[in-house]
Image (cartoon, rainbow, N blue to C red; front, side, top):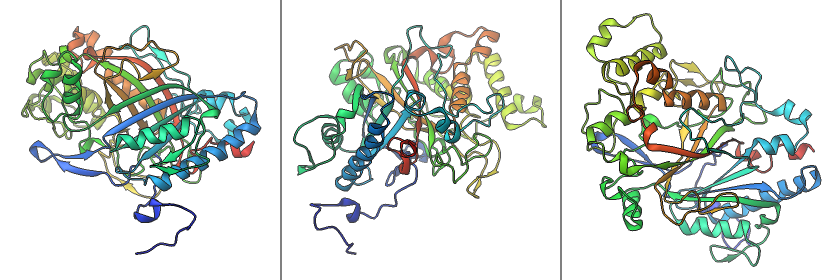
Length: 468
């Protein structure tokens, strides 16, 4: 089928490929699934990732430049997507905004009117994106960042990302895929604060770790997509469609399908170092129990395990309260594992977090079944220490296994609740459990955190600036 095209464009791949552009930024058209050990379907994410954080480079009260910046960034992103289609073999670009952008760049009467607000008990009326906090297991020197923007670039081809980084942020003669390009440079509007590069793909952590001599890398199972071995993108653990959006699931925010920030979501960005040497000092069974739950009986050498429903031990089933909610039952199961096994697995810690506990009708009129996942991870491995570039951090030349966490959910309050459950402090104190028996806590050290608002694609360029 031949599409009409502008003969003034050298090429427009948006017309060559039939891609239905989503309203959200976090949905990635064209991803495929494959079957791993045990027949578990696994989503295959783009191989290469880069996050760029930045502060706006002009005065906070310069609203004329902010409106101009909105136009220029929108034009630049559209030009890039003409050359690199919205597919894994092209390029995905997500643009998110930190609270300093909304607090310092926009008048309070504007944000009061449009910002999504929490409807969760205990935080009603708060913005649905709030400042990130230091969690109980975080180190004392954790950096709570204050960036205005964060760009997330994803592609199966690293050169695509590097090309676009150059034309967006570096001055000079510009070209996209070798084709001369104009009106793409926006680097004069921004001060780049960090560049964070990484990957997620078959055997990549082992290949990279061994080549760079990272201690413990020789023990990473062949084929692993992440440094800790186990697959994180099983279909039953991935949010599909628009479930993470502010407006989709009732009870999280006040947003509706016609709100300005509909099809947007709360994004959490963090960087975590991983002690893979200590992790692989554990036996395969011990790693399986800490990744999933203490009663795990699957093949400990398998990289992929189904996560739901959790098997319930017979003695627990006989004693549980039949009138309890699913959330209460999972809490009782956590208590059982802590009391009888002395181990809390990461899977059981979060099993009732980030997924629907009962069937609901979404605000879009769609029936979402119990078990539907609404928290989405698009995190990726890294060997940076901590980043490849930073204006505020001392960068070590010694590579270190790590993770750049990028997560999307209906509110920052929901993420905070989920992350606190991951630390498991209450059960740890009640049963005097060591850190190495609490999920992954002993093996992960988070060094940087920040919450962002990821708008819809329609408002990904300087949201709300058009009202100034």
